[in-house]
Length: 342
Image (cartoon, rainbow, N blue to C red):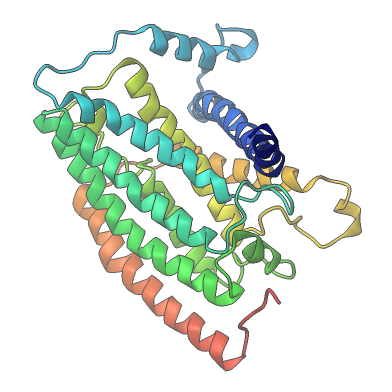
């Protein structure tokens, strides 16, 4: 019995330990990145609006995210008496859990990925589609009319923009000939897809703003109700999970945009002069550049009306992405561009 257990550990134990270490190498920096993304957002918006931003907690205000975390953890968890308590507490866990689960297939370089599966892109699309459940459950379980209205608004815009995102993903699949994220990156070694698919790149990024409920598409936080949308009844740690989930999704969508259109970990030019720079640096650098545009949009653009948001998704992005998909398929077929990865 002992020999069989030892043999089983030798077979699977080290593999499990390796997976756990990889998960920790992703989750811990991601949580720190989420915390300091909030700091970066405050500082960048302050500079754009001629303000100072956080400056009291630590040098240059660098400890402000830590202070915010301590404050949220020490607040009382308030559960409405007429709410569905189990679902009320489950909703933020679903939202935050899905934002972490998606990172399982994200390749940070040519060698480091938790799960290098052949259908990684399909997995990511499925995970992003499930995110709407956490929002709907949160709005309904709160038993509050304002929370429910915010949840319905958020669900409507997420569903609307997921359709155009789906067409964008299909165009990338047509060019790369693969659903594997590593293969998609390697297929861009000669030319990043942001060049031949520039309109789809723009549609994807704008849809990412809507998918993450960011300005100018943060319709759940409408001024007319003077509340914070679907999470209006949440406080303390449960609110923090929604907060972390939103910013983790921003980083995730930036990473996905980097992989699909900006060559992932590949340097800007196939030059030997850039070979000494680690691949992960290029990946993180591109993500940071896209996150800066996320923050820039919040400081610059006014909020859309709900009818404008729906019109843009269904009457502009959907038909345009469908037409571009057909054109891409025709070009790939005529010039026999299938299987670029091989």
